[in-house]
Length: 197
View 1 (tube, helix red, strand yellow):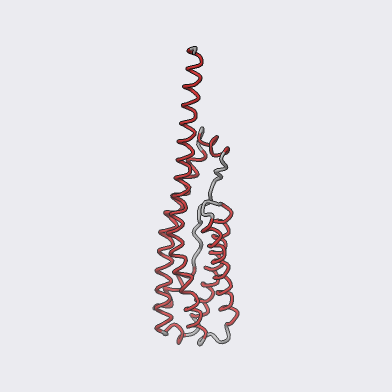
View 2 (view 1 turned 60 degrees about the vertical axis):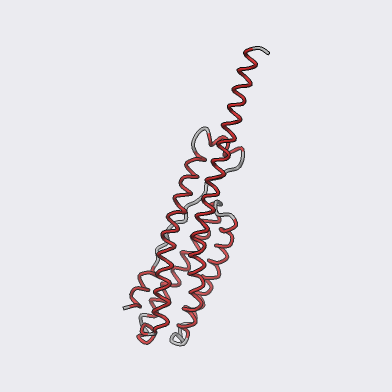
């Protein structure tokens, strides 16, 4: 075997080892995104489970605000559906963007509920409502911390798959950029604090 053949074989072997290493790193980073989403998912579930109890407790005081209560429950169902899609594909940018949009709508509808609640002193004084508001605020805070970990994982993945020469492996094996879960303007937290006073 000639020395040029040996050099070619050595270069080819190095290229294969590098490609396998790049593929494995991208896969590991993508799995880190899934793990980080799992942490958010736990907090979303906790929050989504609190909302029907909050709406049910508020119903007896908000007889004339059925549209507001229904909007909260509709937004909750949409957020649940978006979360289920994102849970199955946490590195998929469209799924994460859809979830962020659904979360924004849910935050807005909860904000309107809490704004309406300001006009009902007996609702603000209800112990169940105050406890649920505190739990909802706590869940929102935990979502914020979990979102940061998720976004950090997405940033690491996007950086790795976008750098040359790893971008070549990313394109060949369809490692697409992921999307960060943007923080939503959450009137829920501000309104929940007011109810607790």
